[in-house]
Every structure is written in C-alpha cells, then in structure tokens.
Length: 395
Ligand SMILES: Cc1ncc(COP(=O)(O)O)c(C=O)c1O
Image (cartoon, rainbow, N blue to C red; front, side, top):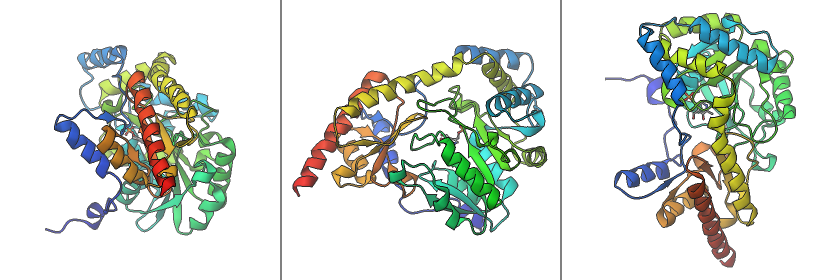
C-alpha cells in the first residue's frame, strides 16, 4: 500500500552521524561498560514534591480529559512567567499547553507554514528540527552558522536564504552548541524578521540553564510579540522529560487556531501533569536551580580540564547541558573521532556531524553523569585527542 510522501520523507536519509550513538546503545545492551555522554537526559529524577502533587491531583480525580488548551491554572502560571521575563503583557489567551516542547515545535510550524513554504532553521541544529518542519508540510532549509562566529547566527548570512521562507526557527540557549545568543544577535534577527516578514519560532526550552550572560527572549524585543511563537517546556528546567508538558506562547489569534489543531491531534495534556507543572513553576526558583546546579558544576570542572591543554577547543559554554568541543587539531571528522573514542575508551559522545554540517570536526558532550566520572571522561577525551593530534602532525 502506498504511504504518504510526507511520512516517508520526514527524515532526510543517508548517514547522519548517529551510527556511533546506536553502536553505543548496542554495546550497553550487550553488557559493556560505556560512559554515556550522548543525550540530554538528566541524571536526576523529577523532584519528589512535584511527584507528590501529581499523585494528589490524580487521586483528587484529575484523571479525565483536561481542557484542551490547558488548565486555566497552568495557562495563567505560564503567562505570568513569560510576562515576568519579557515585560510583554501576556494572558492565558496567549498560551497553549502542549505535550512537551517537541509537539509545540510541530504545532507552531503547522500554524504558520503552508505546503511548499520554506521553514528556515539554523545548523548545527537539534536533531528533530528538519523532520518537524517537513512533518508540518513545509520545506526545511538549513542555514549554517559558523565556528568562527562561535556559532552566533548572523542575519547577513541568513538573509540570502529568505526567498520563499515564512518562518525562522532559533534556539537559545542552544542545543547542541551550548551558546546563548547575544542581545546583538537577537536584535539583528528581529530586524530581519520584521523587514522580510518572517515568523520567528523561538525554542527556549533551556532558558533556565544559563551559565554566562543572560537569556533574552525575542518576544521581549520591540515589534516581535506579534510575530514570535515561544516554545517552552518543563522537560529540561524541572527534569520532567517523561511528563510531556510544554507550551507555545504567541499572539491570541494564533493560539485560537492552535487550540483547534490540538483538539484534532493531541487533545491536550493530562490534568494531573498540568497540576504538577503549575506547582513546580510557582514554588519559587529552588527546584529549577537544583536541576541546573549539576550542569553548572560540571561546566566549571570542564573549564578546568580543558584549561590544562591546548588540543581540544571549547565553543563558549554559556548555557544548556552540553559542551561542543572542537577536535579539528586531530585531523579527524567528529564522526571518526567519536567512533575511535568509543572503540578505544568506551566513551560515547555525539559527532558534530549528527547536527548538520556546520559543526563538522566537533563533538558534543552531554554533562549528564556524576562529576567525578564526567571530569575523568573529559580528561580521557583530551588525552586521546592530544595523542591523535601528535600522530596527525607527524604525518
Ligand atoms: C532544543 C530542544 N528543543 C526541544 C526539545 C524537546 O523537548 P521536550 O519535547 O521534552 O520538551 C529538546 C529536547 O532535547 C531540545 O533539545
């Protein structure tokens, strides 16, 4: 039977640098001890007080269909949080609660892209971006950011790709680079979106993990609230990846349509999850600081380890739970290095090539194991890179 072009062409196909990830998974399944630094899953679990609220809510009967747009309580809570951060008046009518940020990304693109429209995204990118844009029926087009710009996007490099585009997807703090976009970068992007009439889809799921500088939401910039769809999530901020709770914040008219889309797709998010999320977001900053603290600590450890050598470069590690390391001194691709590292030292990292082409010759390290093992693994990565760079220089 024939399947739709849309579903069969959701992902690009071909080698995308994920082989090393699947190989590491197989090695673990076969009982090998592998140091896993590949994916963005916390090494702590959802806080017990959040679980207690989930339990209370479920036992109180919130196990039926919840309101499709989200409960009033959670929509109000998210609206207050976004208003607080951006200074832009925000009410529940600007908020749709979604099953995680991923579903919000899909809904946002569905809201603004018609079939054949181009949806732009920036390379290196979070793995699902191109498939999400294609899934919404649009043509996904990557625009490279550059290692020499420390992966800060440049509007003058995006502009030549704008023909036919209706949206631009950005992500700050960034996965996979760990870069936080500067005010100057965001001002340039805002100006581009206004001049070229683009929707800006702003993925801010790492907004509570900022180690240097500050997170600025483009919703806060003049003239941007009416053309920005902010994507947020409880996954990273509160170690609630499995609870599937996120949101879109945008203009009321868009949210009205998005509610219609949700009615015909997800039919909302469980009420007891939403109650737990409301509790987590209103209980003060303590919970999110607790979740961010291990990454902040490991980032400091990484600076120490990397400071003691000069083979491996570090892309400014300003936010999120990852480090992007430049291993080009070894003369190897990120993929070849990651494979060799797995074979020789049983350490699994993601090749930069698995996030597009812009981060070739880099590897991404997730800071998601305990401090001692993390620092030791990073030291091994540096020693291994230095050995390979020495061989490369002698060739
Ligand atoms: C940049 C980025 N956006 C969105 C997501 C989706 O997160 P969730 O659907 O769990 O909210 C992730 C998950 O890793 C991510 O890294």
